[in-house]
Length: 231
Image 1 (cartoon, rainbow, N blue to C red):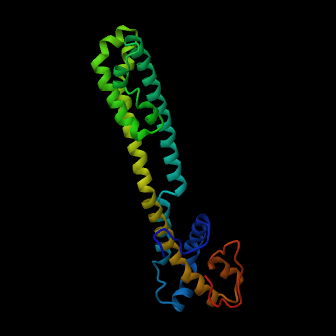
Image 2: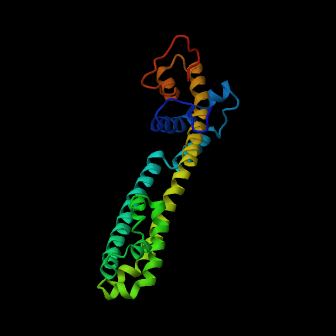
């Protein structure tokens, strides 16, 4: 079984709901279970609640994907600012140094096409842009450029770097978070399975009591007469 493979084919929410129901009911029926299986002791209901709490403490895959999506949207916004800043700077560079491709290339005119949609490439590009701005800052400001546009480049580059790093770290953590959540769910499931199996024996003649413990089946599953001890 892989690290991210569930032992069960039940919706996570359904398994959690069943666990809560069993944890609440089991103390009332503990004598029945412990007389059949001596390992079902007084602390068993609490262990189910602990297993549920462990699942709850883990980030769901929906939350992880949502955070990555949030960071992606933020990156798109910052990339838009970077491209807008570059176009503004280049307007004044062309104004100060018309038809001078050598200087224009110092500001990345020959590279922008490759980096405008790639945040990993845009990060060093913005640093290079800032170095060129420092070199020609007085001429660009004299040509009419707002100084705040130029002085804001380092902060913009840092924001891009920090957000890109956060996104990559979250992508890396996605596998770990998913693995931890599945492990917690599998642990909960493992605690509920023996109760379901025992109930099918000791409460075979009590459908109402049996229904409290038998695990919910997947929608596509039907009971089989051959399943003497189904989950």
